[in-house]
Image (cartoon, rainbow, N blue to C red; front, side, top):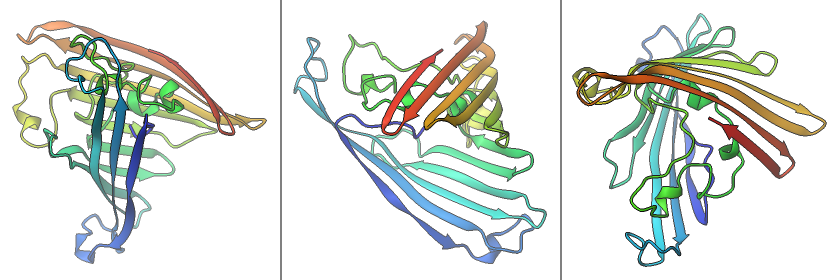
Length: 270
């Protein structure tokens, strides 16, 4: 999610450029050319560290580039009014283990909403609001505390709102109706993503399977007080490394953000 703010850090955003693709790039019935956006993101962090556990952090400070991506989008509108396109996020860091972060195609219409197909966050992650939406700082509810501090070798993360991350899925998002937006997603296997893993992933590797994500959110404003609220649910099954069913996934979450001018308050429970 791009709602992250930075602790003692600077952020550089590559300027987005609009260019026109050649007309032969169109293959879905539109007579116009596709609109291409090219952008990206780089986050450079400086952290000052003072803790008793010195493993990995003995210098007392750290430089960290925790995100570096190139983002490519393409979209056009067909003669019947349906918008279609693709979104691709390419990892650009030297230490990234995968070349792509997200890669999906979509179709959308103002009347019935948007359908995304491919490697993308699930509906719970997209709908979830809370403290991470207003927090100024890396070491809090955003879940990146373990990027800077060592907790006896134990990773610490924020609230769990996605058991599937960017695994291959289908996601639907409704159009906004009187401030309300509804989303749902279906993920067959959290270990499957586009490319070879889409067909080669084992059923005996401890992944999550048949995961349904649901989310509903509302945005409004009363007397210059803006508020966003959400309710999310995620349900599926978890398997052991031996392939046996480990148990059910049952996640329920709720959150609220309140903003007034430059002041914000956020709360969420998962």
